[in-house]
Length: 96
Length: 484
Image (cartoon, rainbow over all chains, first blue to last red):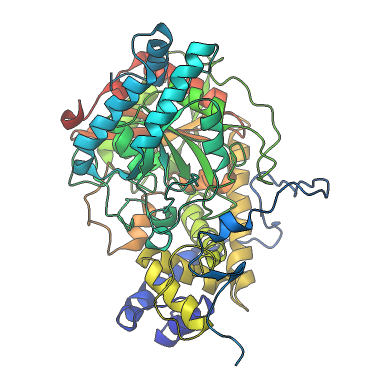
């Protein structure tokens, strides 16, 4: 079921917007197939009546009052960005 | 001075035997002369450390201070530290100077502790050997051809080599306990939510937890006293009272019910490691504890369950590393996709990519129920096993890792065997339980750690159990020959 080939890896890598070197793709395909084979052990377990567990203590999201607690720290935060101008993060042109 | 525990150093500061500036300088000198052998630090912060030490000395002169005041510590490079590089072991964050402090860092600062620097780690905490760090592997101080374990390998090695009295670590699948075992130190992973994750770079958010890495259980208690507690900035931190973790260290072991899961002593466990663990358990029998064989029947599901949940959450968390707001950006991107693809492709190493790919696949359309939801269900079965076991016993014991430290390069081509080195620690994260590794002996001069697993929020109990072992044995006081 889950043996992945080169085109699968390329497709997944694009979904993740993750550059993968052409020469490494066969190895990733093997690694990923092996990992998926390992996790297939889970299919031997009947879990039909088991509720999925999202949080180890089954806690629910804590809510707080909707009040402003942070001050504007834009200049400090943007000083770490690769490229900014006038308070905006710059990326290559998206719309021609 | 470098063989003293936090408790002893704190007494020395209090009595005026030495100042924090003197103490800090002596550790900086050791790091400077010895760390090139083991590569345990990514960044050393001597100026900041000496400034903090000077302040600590002034605070002490002015009045009452906490026990950690003036004590130098090493921080894992996963914790954001304001104005200091926070790389998470990755080229992706090599340019990242954090604009703020993690809550854990703020808490140590508030109590007057000193930061010596930031320790090496597997890239984004993904690894069991410290070999995935962009800054090169850390070497095990006991035998430098061996790995220190991971992902908190730099912290474990630094503490074992006496380059810091104690350090912080984080543990998603064993990343505090396995390196503590490999390096012969004491490591505690608290209950999920006990310590704030704010400013701790996320790997798998439903599993990640920070904890102390020290030489003694008493020191771990002193560190946890500072680290634990509710944080309004981390919505998963838990609103449970924080006890004084040193208060019950001396409680008796008489009548303590210890469960030994038969699955943790079966195939896959090194025979010599098994013998060390068995004699550690005998030590507890001498102290009046009662041993009971138990079963955790879903133990074999822990590794596969983890390798769905952790990569899925990692692929989601690491999507924030996009080359736009901080961190590494590729040169001359052609368009926006090219910017994302190349920045991430050039910024991440092989193991991180592997996990992002697995997680992306598991979460992709059509596979979500078959993988992620399925793993969340088996996660509950694993947790139920523990809950059932804890109806009969107070603590579960076993090995922290199936072997002693393996050699650098030995498992790098074999990800799945590497994953299996966390076979005894991973289930504890899935169930959100507290766990410890305590030095319990040696095999061929390499340390072996005894793992203690407790009920949710039973950190005091675990520290008590570990402390009593350390009163009866001296494994935890032994130092690697090159770093005595």
